Length: 267
Image (cartoon, rainbow, N blue to C red; front, top):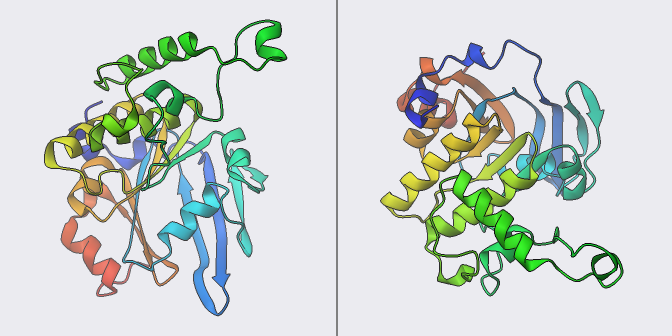
């Protein structure tokens, strides 16, 4: 499915079954500052949700909780209706959730394949891998090349160091890692921030391709046209609370901005 058709798809296409991810009553405070107050969010199979709001609305806190980087003070998270506790990003990974943060968390001095498999390296078979823990670099580069080809991410070689890549290509490495190891859900925090027009378009197309594979996506962005272009629904946070949920096919930039600023109330 193209990114253009994603924007026009009816949300009912992905809401005919129970949500794969449910968060209910999520609250979090830092001292006297209440970052989240009873926030609910659902994510359905094959859906892209745009998560929007002003700075300080609670977006980063919410995605850190959903990715296991923070524990909520109150609330419940469910996967396929099953309550789970995400004590760490490893718990999130075990439940099929991967996160691409704005700072990407790539290692510039390492090559593409090493970054793709960072912390999940492929070992040589037999004693060399099990006891000697020797990395199977050839297998990693071969598999990485296959993943990049399937995602249509263009680079010269898997041996290329990440610090030689463009911003869009670096984002591609981070996204590819989330797709390779994330089974069902990818959370993306400002995936096109600080990118040029051409690189932004490449990342937008990549998001469309991984969604077409069936991955559900939570997209955090200040780029309202981009959110409308990619998402099926938009969840608006304001001052740590959920201010509204909008069907993308039934809204526009002006209405989303009104809800963000509090000029329009969604019941």
